[in-house]
Image (cartoon, rainbow, N blue to C red; front, side, top):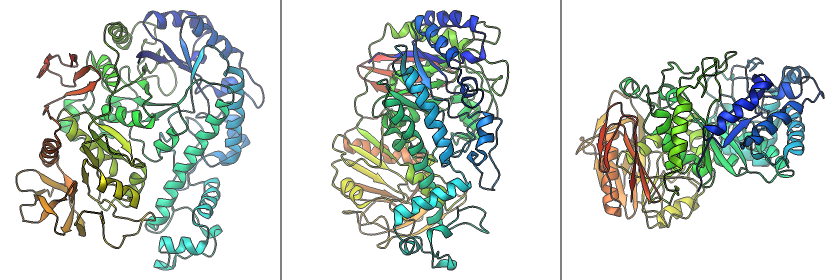
Length: 633
């Protein structure tokens, strides 16, 4: 697989006489790809029907003549002001009923049919005009679905569409009332038209209602995206992608990915460190200029799965950003490290955001590959180094790992609906599991919950999978792999009720969760042999073997055959001990790593990265701070 670099460019931001020089500089730096167009609707159609595509024609030609390949983005993330005036109901409403107004971006509701039709129209114009253009080598739909809390909309359009979604799902209002348990608190409905959205209620809404609304909202994102991909494919054979955003879990990225050829994501290691990683202050200080050692890798593996093996980084942080609580500059070498880490996980391309720092508007404090005065910024220097190194290193290919970690967006919806304790969330549970595996020097495949064939894996982990259909239970029970479940495995039905028999009700696993509790995070529950449960614990009954035990003598993890059930949230020490023992039984070698050192096997290479601010020793040799080391296998 040929690995390439790129950047994101906005020709509408710069005088036309600058375009050719910019294109030559990009090509001279070793860049292959340039993404354009995704925010340009107001310049393409400044007033209704006044189409001004000629400038974009010229920009594509200038960039293409320089040898660059174009990723053309549809401009639907930023509808122009005149469109909002024409369709004021297209604005999303937040949970308090306030409009998400014009003046920035993503100001639309996924359910507004008139806006969807306007998107169909502009995408059709794009696809017809550029579908056969030899320089347009890939497409991007919209931009960063769900970013800025824009998946859930409480608008009139969303309410009407939700009622139709419920009719199709349940068939009759009697079936919905039974599934939701609406006899409780006299919440029974006489018709689907009686059902409102689950906001502005006196206290919490029915969790079945809230979960259904999250599922509906996720489906609206997928269907919105599908309309664009269907149009593009009628005019172009070029691959289509979408740039997902880190730790945005309000819609099912796998379902959107089903309609894409490539999954891409936008990687901002420093921007994400404080508000998305879930780390304490000491960790944030230690990695303030490097980013978390595992957060980017987790998303690389996630989007490799979403893209069915084909994935890119569409936006790579190039320096300080403008939107995080604090915005430090990366350590020298980090922009090279981030690119190589992505390639180690199978990325086809890494594109830096953006080419030149804008001296105006909301992102004027967001660094680029060039400074606003056109001088080289550090990102351009490090990108040139990566481009040169790409010529001298073997091609990367990713073989299937021996370890699979199931990630399920629907489980995240359920945890968000009913976390049962402050700060408890599904993403963090899965991410903590991934981190513990990475710290053992392990490569991990992230797979979707629809997977049923586990024959190539020796160890499968499914933490926090709150709803588990029977065929998945059977597939996991019959797998040859060691399988780790819990906590809250199969703790709810598809409609968010407690099942009977009580969970997990797994074939071949004699374990029953008889009681659950969430406790303060500063009240850990110590385990015999080291480590603790933190924040959440389940009481376990049954005849399965006890694998972990609390210091008070209660079962903490139990095992029957290939199935191990963990009845709580393990801290790092407990997770490491459990996974190390399971890997030893499964014949998977481990390599405990410390500090910011991590590795990933990639074909004939093992690529080491050091997120630490000091040099470190590895089994492959010394690695510098913010450094990359290549080990031939």
